[in-house]
Image (cartoon, rainbow, N blue to C red; front, side, top):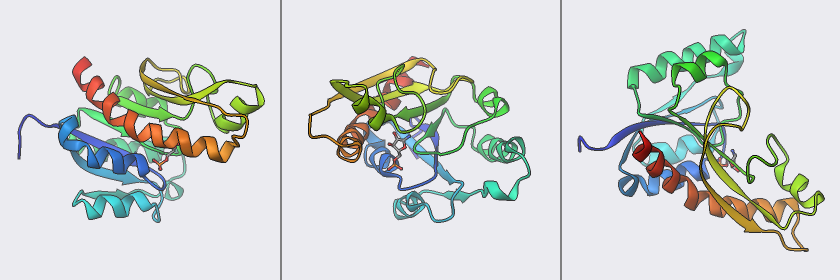
Length: 191
Ligand code: GRF
């Protein structure tokens, strides 16, 4: 094992197309993906990880009484790995303060909008409805305020008059796949 690689953990809930891009670019980024964790048993991203020979962990949030209890389990598991970064890639859970504090300055998220605009859900439709000329994606550090931490990199995507939320989501997602590996590399360089 190359000792200069940075250990990371990736958290997912679904398709994991961003995870796939991170896997495909791991050598260039200089990372070793130690584990992919999902809160959904059927997340396709788990298959992607297994195919790449990466350890996977399914932690079912419905088995915990509170968000905090689930997050404690996550914290315990991630602490056994002690990663340099915790990468959120379509992880559809709001994280507790305890989790964010446990990995302060180490958690990255990708959001499908040009933050600080369009925090939260349904970003593409809201951008179209507002008559925006550009949509895009943002990779940022995660803090206790939703979608508000320091921005690492952004990529804009023009909105055309024929765009729907679906067509825009596809174009933005393609850009996300290019953006996330670059942003991880940059974040590691900032540390
Ligand atoms: C992406 O649109 C990302 O911006 C958002 O969740 C989606 C994840 O897609 N946070 P995938 O699972 O990486 O395909």
